[in-house]
Image (cartoon, rainbow, N blue to C red):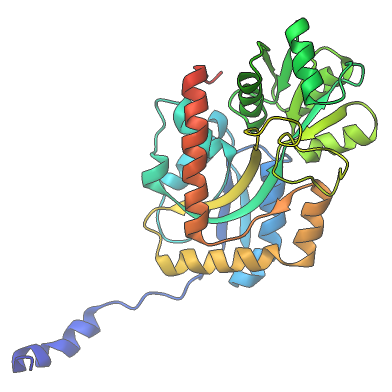
Length: 317
């Protein structure tokens, strides 16, 4: 039995402990660390619309571009762990720690994975006049003559997929880096570069218009938008399984019950017809899973792309 003085003191101890306020009491910010209108921004706005009502508050999308996504990421990583600020992270969050040596945050220490929102296939496209119909013919051509591939920027999924491809194929093909997929595609359509890895949002309209030609997709299964297009694995590149992605992170130390609530409601939002139809139109696959599953996936992405970046000596622009 507890001593009588402890029993007498217990009510006062309980009374002194402040009750946690109901959450959420105010709008929640979803920080997008890139400029508006790109794939990350669009994914954030698609998920924010149904997520707000599910959480019982407004989810306000706020763009904080700069530093290859590091400015917006730092705003969350160095902010309060009160459950009112989320980060729409992406592939860049897995690549940047290996490229930048002076980040003002530690990705593993300062951020916690909450929910995966999308999985984005990459489509390998070539200039329509290039005399290749598949990956093997592209590799053979690259061994015969000088080619260049385009990317939407150093360290992007398109760049690292291209780097992985040329290394696995044993070919020497330099990258031409552009400020985004749009100018890269302009030069690809004009024949100034030979090929690129692109996300469906920008690639599918160009494919439909005949301005570029797809020869493979870099995920494990064929995509419904281009059912006749083989995967890279089917095309003889067994290790070229690459996808971009988006997911929600929060400041480490955010209460566990808030993490679980947001994860639950993100998964519910991903099942709505509105979100599924919007993502389908963009060629994007909805994510799913627990915080632990997303954390494990993210850790594997950091390890995989960190190794590629270090081995290739890739540095930020």
